[in-house]
Length: 486
Image (cartoon, rainbow, N blue to C red; front, side, top):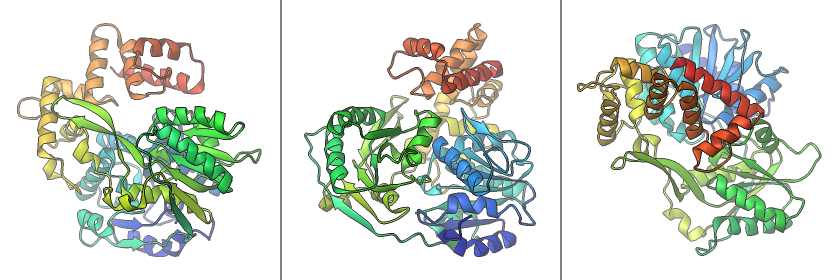
């Protein structure tokens, strides 16, 4: 591993802290090297005889981190370093560091509260405050307090309030702070045009930047639709330019192409959602163009449904995005809004705990044996109104009884790697001889790009069935496993 990584300056302090304490907080800015340097450094510690689990907020980040760590060790993924995501995994009996998505870790600890064979759990990018990250940390702290005093829990991020997390974990938990790489970063404000569509504004900005700057370009857009429309416009505006999408629906091989330099040396334009905001280093990128928008799922308690809502990106998100330009050298970030309006943006995105449907969390806690969410350690406790709405939903599904205890039906739902409503649909299908189709429909509802885009599930199911690609095949196998579980 490279000695140039700033994280190496504080690794001795971190290792000493974990020898003396069962937990710590690591605050390290983007580019410090925390995601790929810390986990391998734990393997030769006397207390670390088992697996180190590293949680990652997104599948593409989990895979990229594992591949990078394996490369640094001169290995391929699946040996010392492995990863496990929903549709893709590489691990073996030799694996000591396992990178997983946050949801997979929650399922793991629910099924095995003692985390047998695990020496440490590292929560990366904890500042993003995803529901599964908050839940996973709460469950890991309870496991540590009740069953596994020897389990090490490390919270890592670039922007979190270290003292706040340390207080949550126990007042004596040390906070280790690392410096980042201090490459110069210039911010340029292009302003906004309210009447212009975001893809038109982005295309014009990229065309300008293409002439003004050298180096590869990373552009942030709120969603897949805007990315595809921007690609179409760039094909006309910059013929021959290499424009690559980077989002959760892109095939792994295409994600790798977007992350790495072009093998033929061509300059590239990467059009990304917030998936590229943290964890990933895109080789060769020295210019960022930010539309200043983010899209997140929000639960409407009155309607009982979740919608994707577009917001102005927070100041913290904008800082993370801009920092992508200066990971490997001096960079420039262009923002499609006015400098004078920047201070009016929210400082941080709200945690998922405040905006998400809490039915999955409440069911997971019922399976864990906790009827009262407030009994666990949370950075922000679940809102009472959201918990009440979740309980009402779960009682309606037959998953909880009137006293909030999990039922036999609830245990069936909780055993499936799906949200409660989708799990109920799968069980209903299985009870009526259609487990296979129900499983495929459930997967289509969760994997938006599968079988193409559109709201017609029957058409998407038909296209998916005819698709012989690697992702389609892996998805069919996954749906088959779900059908068997039901």
